[in-house]
Length: 111
Length: 116
Image (tube, rainbow over all chains, first blue to last red; front, side):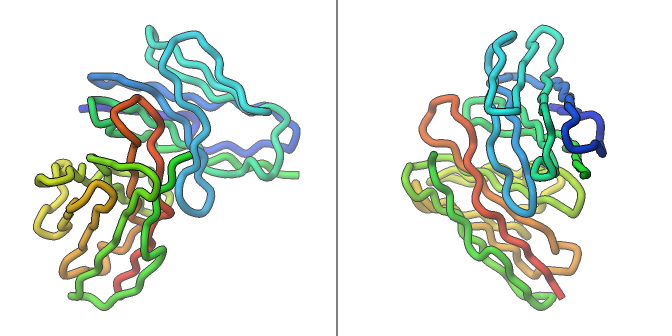
């Protein structure tokens, strides 16, 4: 059975802090690993990673994948209150890009 | 990016009635769509894979007679929750991926179902 595990489950930080969110996986037929941010409703896409060691960056967010050790990290620098959300890691498998989600990390950024 | 539209965004229904949720890919064709369910403070759990022109594939523990899926065209999949009960109250969300390429999945806006 495909499994995706995220840690920590929840995190409270002060504005300006840097956070690292972790995602490890055990799946068959790996295609890619994706990070999403979920606030009130549907998840919004952040990154898709398919190759090891190549950092993807978007503003204060960055992510990297290690396919040998089967994990990924999502970094957020200089956090802002608007970063408060649940961050979901998902692994795409098979030919139809079925997603298996981790439990999510609930991030709260306080003033 | 590609757009997936889900309707309705919220619905309240009486116990025992059926509710239909639509998921449309607006600017691409999707031979496969996915239906997820999310309970409060939990992650998204895949319910079923909707296949255009053929039967849906259900995940273990999901009752196919209760959650009817129809994927009649390349841009529309529907999920019908039959004889809904309060325990079916949840956030239902669909996703689709354009083409056969390894691209991100695009999600609909989700439907919050409350059964009273």
